[in-house]
Image 1 (cartoon, each protein chain N blue to C red):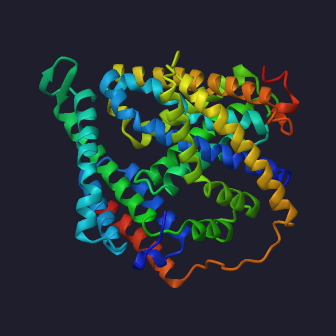
Image 2 (spheres, each protein chain N blue to C red):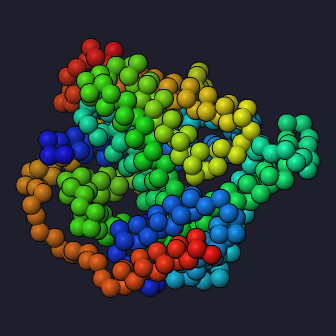
Image 3 (cartoon, chains in turn cyan, orange):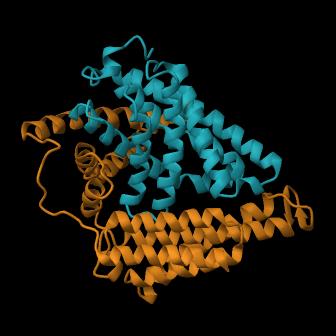
Length: 190
Length: 240
């Protein structure tokens, strides 16, 4: 962890905290959405909650970025005094690990759109594993479980990975990322 | 996150958190609702130690009765089981799913109580300092985190303004995540610039990992006692 530049640390922390704030806002939409789509259908919203991992990893491109970013974003819940603080932290660790594993499998060399989408899938898998163990997802009927899992995987890839890729591309275009790995490797994130 | 004058607030933050995670892991490990209920009463006792009065209990925990019911209903209506009690449309309530729903609702309630006990007795700065000294987190990352977390109120405000801008211009989302992009782009680009300026300011002051500290959180006897009590409690609950 010594080879991180201070500005990379700061950008990761600020982006992760900003993501955490967006997560909080997104969470308030959960109940109205489950009223419309049902508690299973509302899982299409899942992807946004893991976007910190692919977003920060694609910008910093260093080992650990995906994991730390998701934990920090989850810690925002704790620091805003949320009643879900501690469980949010646990699920954040699982999601971050899932995303981090995908980047580790590319040996931290690939940060293109497909890798980011895969990392979203990885985060969804981490999330499902946590829910199976801690939230009793295994007690659901097979149909409910499969529908939830499927929706989260798709949402993780699209609302997590793909959206992060689009966002990074647009951020690169503004020039604010010129001093970072993503800005230097413009072609890779295309 | 803020602290108060309760006995629970005097504990070392990392030790306090670790104890709570121990209880949470124990909760996850058990499928017995009676044991879960025992853990819930333990968590409620922790809230008492956190300086909560009866008014706090009523005011702050009341909203969770709704969530409690929702968690219960979600599992009761969509859980698997063979002994059907009641069935309507796609809801299928069985005696097994009712028990599972009850278990998960109790578990959720215990998680909520533990989190409340933590966030109402822990000071954010002291927590991060404790991360450096007890959990051996790199000071560069810990201070970076602390600096980032200070921008929470400002970021919340910025998101609010950006949402209002969208509303007043009557921008409609064309696809899911469109709103995220139009709020995220200005929010993140501004955050990146701010982070860069802060990093320069931090380095200009010769911030480095070898440093001295104004206040060093230590592990005291009360922290050891706290951990022992929790361990003993978990062992007792699982033994009986």
